[in-house]
Image (cartoon, rainbow, N blue to C red; front, top):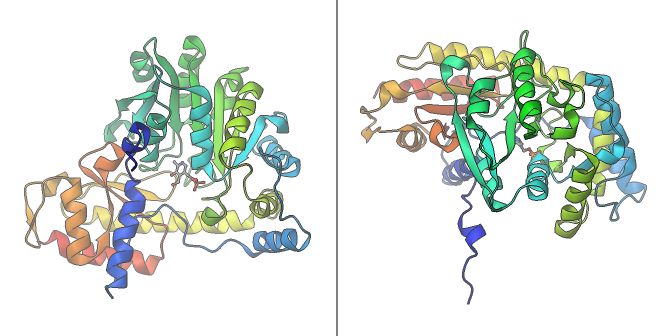
Length: 396
Ligand SMILES: Cc1ncc(COP(=O)(O)O)c(C=O)c1O
């Protein structure tokens, strides 16, 4: 007989994965579902990356590797940051893991535990709070608003810090809002971090998916010495359409990388050898594929926001990055749509899925009631058809 541990009992299943599973269930029942719930590019991994994986297999790179990743990949990651941001660090400060989510877990497991507090601005990516809780630490949410572009100010951060605060989690470009902090907004946050000696986990997984004039900033580079207080997280899942390869990384001060490596060596040994070789090809190879996908995401963003903002009662701020529209649906609370009473974002999203088979994720899952998230990592045809259905739903 087993009882469930306190840690496992406290973990919520990922709301986005749960939404995807619901949609798959309807599909197996023969329904056409417009699935806007998942955070993964619909593109296939570019061929030169797949070729590198195949070559790695043929070359016999099919064994365990060093727990923190092969030196060639850690070197390729260090080169990429130097090229992209002028950020210089030793490849030994890099630890490669099974996706950025795993990197986040290792980073938290290595740095916080019971009695510690982690600051998370909301809306936030669904996994952050559970990943924090799994370490025994607690989290403190700092609410942001649509009016501030869903961005936490330096003053808000400063006010949230208590003697128990160990870390703040930043995510720009962000999921679910697509908000991109400007360099000066991040500099102001960096100054608070330096002054208060707070640690930072900066999740920059969407850094290559920015639109218009928006620019991604590598937080660790903003002030001299700041990198000693920052764990930078990223990976190839979103920019190179490589979600299934499970490749993410962290760049941290050496003693943190070492601790994360110890955790990882006991959890999963090493990340997939084949995926590591594919990731070298992604980072060192031709980057044209990234721009092709980025441009398509930008065109879809314009399509989605244009169409959503044309719907009565819907307000969709324009995201500057990532591939999500996070739109306000409060005008429908208290109404009945297709015989379903809408009281909040959860009832809105389940009614949309059940009645017109449009799958969105409720804002409450991201700590922001009153909104729904639509992932535009799907074809323009699906977007148009799905939003036609949503329009029908909103007519009641
Ligand atoms: C903000 C954010 N960080 C990290 C991840 C995880 O990425 P990976 O698939 O590499 O684990 C995601 C995926 O949805 C994300 O949205």
